[in-house]
Length: 177
Ligand SMILES: Cc1cc2nc3c(=O)[nH]c(=O)nc-3n(C[C@H](O)[C@H](O)[C@H](O)COP(=O)(O)O)c2cc1C
Image 1 (cartoon, rainbow, N blue to C red):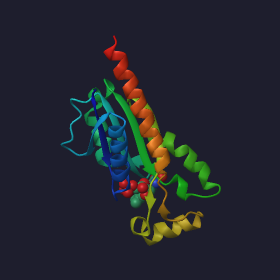
Image 2: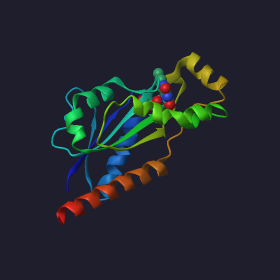
Image 3: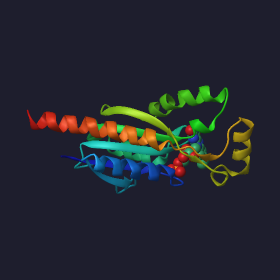
Image 4: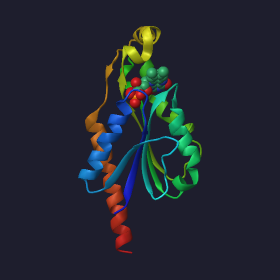
């Protein structure tokens, strides 16, 4: 069975914890996984399946995650890629929820060509006063939102289980070819 690269970019740690959780769940499901921060020296070679995630700042992936996609576009095109973004849709309330519904597509458009992309999910992460600063926290409150840990671990586990299922199915298919 192949090893999956679970690569992440995280400014304040919530995306890293989601990546670590996905790595644990994949491993428990019999899919071996390397969980690594996406940086200049992170390599894509040797992998044919990728779970790549980033915190979202201003509706984009963090620069190191975007740079990884750019640098390894050819390798990623020959493999299968599951992408996840970590933002704060669940922190928003009322009419702003409708904007949150569009965020997944807006972030995905910034990826550029990624033919191996199987799926992109937008998860909610952690929103704190320290991250947003006084002005940002006030802005969030004015929009009816609240700071907090909005991670939905059941949804994250379910997604990891789906990925593991698809990889196992693909592995079995190629083994019986
Ligand atoms: C400067 C800044 C900009 C952000 N911009 C967005 C955004 O455009 N959309 C969104 O959904 N969340 C946004 N967020 C929320 C973060 O993506 C969210 O808190 C996430 O959990 C952070 O992940 P991390 O802990 O791995 O850094 C922003 C947070 C910060 C600090």
